[in-house]
Image (cartoon, rainbow, N blue to C red; front, top):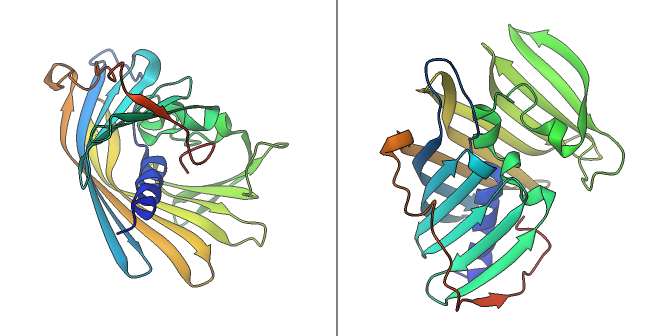
Length: 249
């Protein structure tokens, strides 16, 4: 399979799902670190791509590290300031980028552990709440971008059931969904619930979409977490390469 295609799918997997964490604290328990195994399967134009990785998160600096193990080994590091590093072990090359859209605060991990599930990070992205309605005991909120925030989306919707987000969608200028996310397989993590299965549909054009399913497993927290990749330092002799785009979308 074409490497550029694989890289695109990898980035889609990272950003759609870029995953679930932050500084959530209760009197009973504080979750400082978390790690999960991730299997990401993407279907596009009849071709299927599977990616295996390990995802690590630490509250300090909202540090998120994704160590890809298959089909190629690489590591992606980002933090709350949007500092992004993409290191390829085989070629000893690193891509460096920075931007608010790359911040780990845009991840599902941050949203859930920080208690930001009511807006799923939309406020940080520059959206405001337009209206709220209830249908079949589910709470549906509609959000719209404020001013020029660098998005082609005209609105977003979030559906909550029993106070947990189960669906989120972004709409294009034609009023049709451009991206859908489904959250399921909720499990207890400390004092909160997190979805360990996320299914995304990205509509490229009518009748053509990218379907990605991310399944998280092997959940570990606090002292159970191996700190090796959270403390990983990219080799000083790694060659810096220019990114193909501004962000890994």
